[in-house]
Image (cartoon, rainbow, N blue to C red):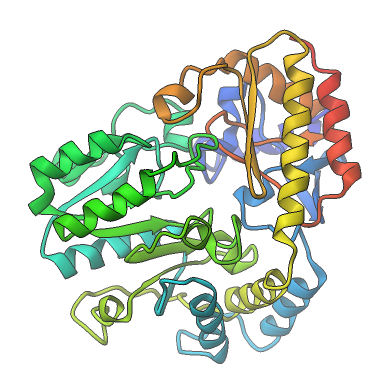
Length: 423
């Protein structure tokens, strides 16, 4: 069924560590080989094996408009015809910055970078520079990229592969990383009581999307804001996933919480490599060359990524987020009903255009509750759905993604496939 992918994977194993360029793609934890993709359009992808799948991964989130949207593709082609990189300012980066600033309530200035990891590590450096403090508080199971300080108790691929601790990271590097369970405001409060005077920032996914999909409990985000204010720390919202996905104004607008700094990625590049961080002008003016906190990047503000991002945000600005959310919620509810009817413990959570299937009845509030889900059931579900033409994230610790391009036929195809799953 996947002979061409198998052949390519065997070749890749000899040339690339683990045969992949990002660990979770290897599909080891779901007892499968990775699919090698040949093309994508709308809500579907086609593998080198000639099979087409409903795509609920969407390049791990960027493709909110679907793959190969004609206006985004046209913008990339036109930009490429003028050169692929300048290493100098271009008009497009000013326009994309304007769109981001206009969209996000708390972002007055923004700096473009090349990945979400670059964005989060830069935002942390800025927070440390502003406060003169060293410690950062993060939530267990949240993933903020692979910079050294954030790999302590990280979600995403780190959790998926059960990598112990942070090999290759000196203990001193994570000594200033404080850890608390997501949604546990009491634990955060205790850490602030002990280390508040030394804590530069709290960084959090306002909606956790790297340990499955975990929603913030009422009062949690508000509590983080209050604690940061009380102790003179900065609140950093990692909106690499949620930015422009849970609403055009991001999670900060949806939940009406004002972070001091925001990190972005994925959607703002329209599928090309990108990242950004922004916030209050008084803070962002500390970044070189305006200020004394250094950060740089050869490909930052790349004209192709900027063009793709501009085209994407212009379309999203006038898209019906509420209608898509209604469709995704109905899909998740029906999916849960179908699987529950097979006698397995299951719940399908959703928010905006994201969803996640957990094979457990325990309430999902943090990484500890997520880890109680039955991974064997998930593996069986993943493999059967893939064989039926539905491409899910090959990890129980990742949120499913939907796009404006997904049709009712796509959702119905996935539901019909779920009906045929056997446990």
